Amino acid sequence: MQLPVADGRTVWRYSRRLLADYRAGLVGVVLIQAAAAVAALAVPWLFGGLVDDLRAGATLDLVNRVGVLLLIAVVIQTVFSAVGQRQAMVLGEQIFARLREEFISTVTHLPLSTVERAGTGDLLGRTTNDVDRVQWTVRFGVPRILVTSVTILLTLAAAFTASPATSLGMLVGLPFLILAGRWYLKRATPAYLASSEAWAKLNGSVSETVEQASAVDALGLGPRRRRAMRDAMKGAWHWERHTLFLRAVLFIGMTIGYVLPTAAIIVWGAWLVTNGAATVGAVTTVALYSIQWRGSIGELMFWIDEVQVATASLSRILGVNLVQPDRYASGEEPADSHIEAREVRYAYREGHDVLHGIDLDLRDGERLAIVGPSGAGKSTFGRMLAGIHPPGGGSVTVGGVKLVDLTEEELRRQVVLVTQEHHVFIGTLADNLRLARPGATEVEMRHALSVVGATWAEAFDDGLETEVGSGAVTLTPAQAQQLALARIVLLDPHTLVLDEATSLLDPRAARSLEGSLAQVLKDRTVVAIAHRLHTAHDADRVAVIEDGLIAELGPHEELVAVGGQYAALWESWRQE
Ligand code: ADP
Figure (tube, protein in one colour):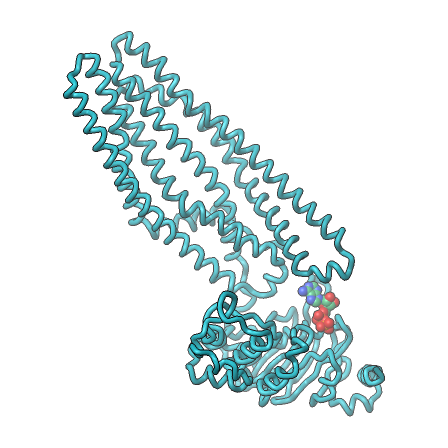
């Protein structure tokens, strides 16, 4: 499943709103650039005048005066261009920063199930390639489009002022430009969209293969992965070629469109001069304008092309906004901390339920172990209990309120899924801890660290302000896991769901961490998805999940005495 893509109208509306918010800045840039453009236009004007003056027998003195004026015009143009360019860049940065912040905030609030279903390639593609493309166009394109549009119009106006008759020659290229432009624009957006998609597929294919290299190796999937990558590469190659073809046609049309006017002005101008309808100077001025014009038109066309690419990318970026949230907070408050699952169903693919209506009452403060064969639905049920995914049917409630009716913040105060993926975020130790509770005081953070036995933190010179993560102090895996556990202490939920399958406990670190973990589990209700039966043995109750249903439930001794599934599992495990 792909993440959604916004349609053209949405992109247009968004861009307009975004640019409108920066209207003052944009107008400022246009005015400064217009001043620079006017100064640049003075140069052909002065040259044309000089030609006529020379024909009329000008003095050296006059030539010198024109020379000084030319110099002044060039200086003015340079200064205004420099200032305008700088303003434009600053503005581009501001607009892009806003876009990026909005995007990051959307991405971090995406429902987890959507992210998982869409695969990493799609989201990764949008956050890297697509953002890069939009960035380039916003930073350089938006300012340059403004500048070149202003320049083109002013040049045309100046040419018509110099000699209306001769200036008609400037227009002969327009049909070519318009035809090529229209032909191109109609085809470009869908092609670039397909190209982005093809690249995302390739990225996804490569990153999946690299991330899961050991699985690929172990299962002998090499040839199949290579084939998949080759196919993805073919797709990307096809679309790159296709968009290149579109650009080639556009550029042919453009070249004709802007070489033709100069030629026409010279031929047509010569005829006008012979018939006394224009002066040689005026024709010179207009011919020079037509040459100056080319640069601006060429640049504008180039940016129109880039805007197509950026529009395609922007529709993918804005598409992320269209993902529906998988829950809405109802504002209800849980009456107590009692968690209850009723008739819980779930399907990863429609029509294929992996949970078939599970009922479970958690008792406050108990240790419940969930066991069962691999693929029975233990982890899936664990995620329902922790409110990660809304169940497909039935409900999981805490104190009478559905978990998915709570705000994310409130939910995490009730129940947390512990996977112990030990990621250290770049920033200070305090930043890493405050992810769990933004308002945590220094005392609270130190307390959390000491609960999990992270005494090493005391040894840092800068204390909680020590920079950690790549490029700074590197924490050992065990320290990183303790940091993650300290975050749970700060969250202080009354219930924890512990998935052993995903708790990447480093075996070497396991011993010291077991103590830390025990401290975190103390005085909380714990659901342990057990893959080692000794966990089950130590639990207050054991739930055996089979085929998406609870087959047996009760204390270890009872289940062993009954002599059912669990007893058999236990027996075979003991004999090992
Ligand atoms: P257990 O934890 O008991 O091993 P799981 O809850 O992981 O079982 O899986 C239950 C079923 O759901 C299995 O058939 C598994 O293949 C399937 N499943 C698990 N995760 C996904 C997923 N992300 N997408 C599709 N199917 C999944």
